[in-house]
Length: 251
Image 1 (cartoon, one colour):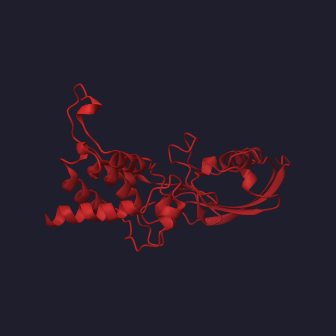
Image 2: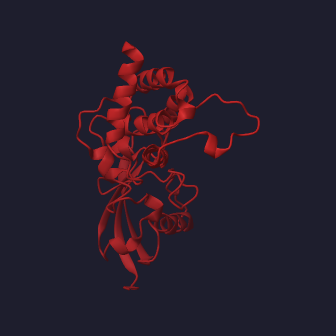
């Protein structure tokens, strides 16, 4: 493994708030280990900026284990960077080379306004979930699993859809800023299970309606969402969401 420390030329979007105009700022960063994660590299930059008396780069992060979906960055024009099925926090600097220039920007979409620098407000996703991404169930003792027969095919498909971490890479990579992959994953994971059938029609209708209300665009089958999704959510979920929606509207 190459353990030589690297020097990188970073071009980072700096913006004080949604009310301020932003701009790209150039930074030169030395001492970057190939074993660092991408976020650790940004931490190193921020330590340098603080020592210089400058404002550190604001960015979202939480688990740093590829679970929470907070580490949303456009890296050289790609959501979460060049590695497939990888979040920004799982991306390591060994994928870059000494002297590389790296452009780092926030996710850009009407529904994701910039809060500061690389941080965006993704509460639009929360509003979609609040519109119908839940089931109403009794909260007493749960039924034994054997009393709720579910085919293995549907169980597997539901689990695959439930892998969505709501990071927003699908929105950021879509030329229409569509959230259909995210919404379809949330609808699919419930539509495929018996527990989700009672509210299936209302769920599909209300979540799609809210998706449009908060400013997401429509799908035009570019499939960039599937290509950039760090959890590999399949495009077929959008077809299932459309079927659920039309059933709700016309049955």
